[in-house]
Length: 520
Image (cartoon, rainbow, N blue to C red; front, side):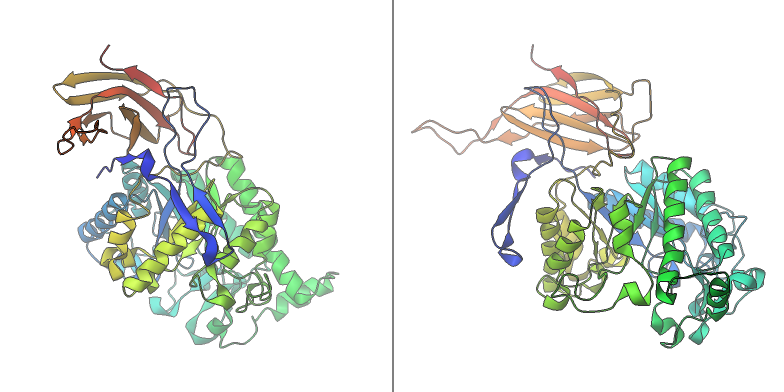
């Protein structure tokens, strides 16, 4: 589904009385272009998490026939595309299992109903999701849980589980959970190998971790993580850090190592982290709540400060006006930690939406994000099921409101700032219809295309998917200002005078426009 918009509709004024006093104006990001060229398309990261753990989103239950799994995937991808989303965050490793063909970990219980059993007839779900997302012009980010080894909702521990095959790196928690010990080098090497295997073998756009590092206390009946043996070994080896600092350093070393390895293997693959939304209570001063720094041993502030990520998605799952965990207050604080100017695209708890007011809260949070981050806005929605169910009318409100305008993913210039080559373009006129066609130039493969066209003094644009090669622009009446005394009831069809087409690469860089003048 294509939606054509007017640039005059892109200016959104956010009254910042909600959070700071004053106003902020969002305008479409505009590249430096020569006079007569179109302004650039809007930029905004619009992503949705598709959770596979406990079959939250996909597939709807374990052991479904392959055709039904694909049908459900098509429905989700088509809805995301129709709502003008441009990225999917797909959970491929809920807990040391795989929703893809892996020689390192067993097939997921959530896929086939039996851990270690491949789908029949065989297909590779991750390869399928990557290809189908790319066909629709959406990025595909693979979402890993780096340390969770077994979840009780997936049944008994099997012979193929890491609990059985690598007991040297696994800790048993209360209530049926198992966890990899982040302090063990074997753990770090194991999870590192799993992530890098996917980076090497699949045509992905990003690697994504959520908020599970050391386990939440509730996973172990609020008892301390059982790592007395590794802690004792560290101290006996001359370690000087406190126990909490040591735990945090275990995670820091892994995050830094993985970021560098991804960049070395495939520099265009983004690394994104989605930590709990509060770093520590009191940061900033009005904030209260869970302390991930001292309970999950996750120093998310450090990772952002040091630039060990390409995008940062703190889970800001609280309302704008909830003072102890206020969405804009937390977003502003995280923004001030962004020393390397990485992309910050907060997570929204869209699954909490139950009615019209909840949907409007989500819309308001998107507007706040745009106000704080006008150069590179974006949000990630948890999770897909809320959009499928259109809870509180959220899907309708998104596409009729902030997501009415199709948008390109913001650039990541520290990864790649070289634009692709412009395509070769031609146009034909049939009555009032104009058909524009384009052919890729030599060089890197384009990920998306933007067709710009001008009627009168107004530029419009439409974003097209990877495999598209033509677009027919039908006549649209445009009301023109009338002189005093003239009849203004009839609208005039204003002809298209200029067309421009650009190529967009997979990191969001846009080529120079290939321009065609009509009517000469």
